[in-house]
Every structure is written in C-alpha cells, then in structure tokens.
Length: 233
View 1 (cartoon, rainbow, N blue to C red):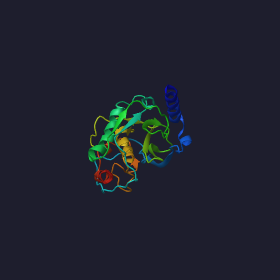
View 2 (view 1 turned 45 degrees about the vertical axis):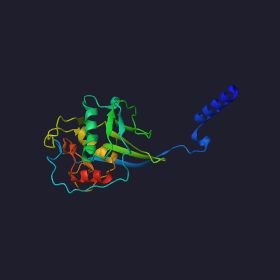
View 3 (view 1 turned 180 degrees about the horizontal axis):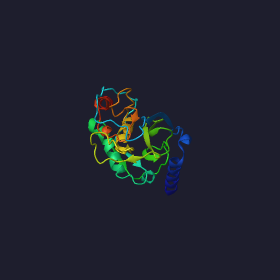
View 4 (view 1 turned 60 degrees about the vertical axis):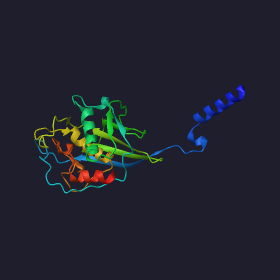
C-alpha cells in the first residue's frame, strides 16, 4: 500500500512538472494587437505649446475593442525614472484613478514600485517604465492578447524628453514650462489601457492624439472621454 501511494505521488508530481504540450494542451502565446503612440505637437521657439482651459470639446471618442479584465496592479520600474522627477507613482496612480472615477463599473488599477522591465514585454503583467521611443514620440502603450483571451498593456514614457510633475492642474497650461507633465500624458495613455483610441480632430479631449509641453488639462476627462469609458464598462 505504501509503495502504491509513493508511485501515485511520483506520478502526480511528474504530471505537474510536464509542459503543457506534453499533456496535450497548447502553450499560451501572446499577440501584439495594438501600439498607440502619443506624439509631440509643434514646439514654438520659446515657452510651452499648451493651451489654457478645456476649450470646446466635441464629445468624440473611439473604442479599441478590449477592456481591463478586473482589478489590476501596474508595476513601475523606478530605476528607469529620470533623475529629479518626483511623485511619479502618485501621478501615475492619479491618472488611472481618473478613468475609474468617471465610471464606477470600470476596474481599478493601482501602481506598485516593483517593476523590473526596461522594455515592453508580454509577461501577464501591466508594466510602466521610462525608455527609448523614437522621433517625436512622447509615450507608447502596447497591448497584447493572450491565446486564452487575457489582455495585457504596458506603457513606455520617452526617457529622452524633459518631464515634470505639476503640483496642481492650474489653468491647464504652464506656459513657461517646456517639459511634459507626467500625469497629463499618463492619463491619456491609460485611456488606451482602458480601451479607448484617438478621437480624431477633438483637441480638448484627453484622448486627443497629440501632447503639449506645459499641458495639464488632461488631468481631468472631457465629455467624449467620459462617454467613451462609460460605453465600455
């Protein structure tokens, strides 16, 4: 009896250790289904290129076709944060909260300072980092779909640009600050995470495709942003 039990235990351990393919199950694989890039708007010779206030929102939005599947944690690699940039996790957390605040049914995404990635990668986690991004790119959000239907998004902020973290939204534009406010850009990027695309020619929506130096007005969502997230969740 003892011998049979030992054989059974050994067999079960072998099954646990065997790869999925040996058990007749295909291994999971991830497909990159979207890359959303936020680009810089034309920069004047001096001062920031932002605009005060929310202007006239047209209420436009587009959806990408995916959604956040339950409450998540986004993992920030603090080692990639540019020197001198403070309150990063707090700003990123506030950016996620803007979307949850607009629609109570939307899942929550919190920020943890335990990330290790220096480049986007499909790993069943939401990752945040500063890293390389080409040309006039401010930030990029990458989204994958795993073969089991799982959705995952990573966001990379361009480490070669000048960044700051504004202490308040102010009037929506810090005219003398020729740098990108992290919370402003992150709120836009995390709209992609929540399933929204760029709404076309609607300059004062948070999901407008271009970012501006000195801009903070995207801390809060415009009518099209709110309508968009509500239509998903």
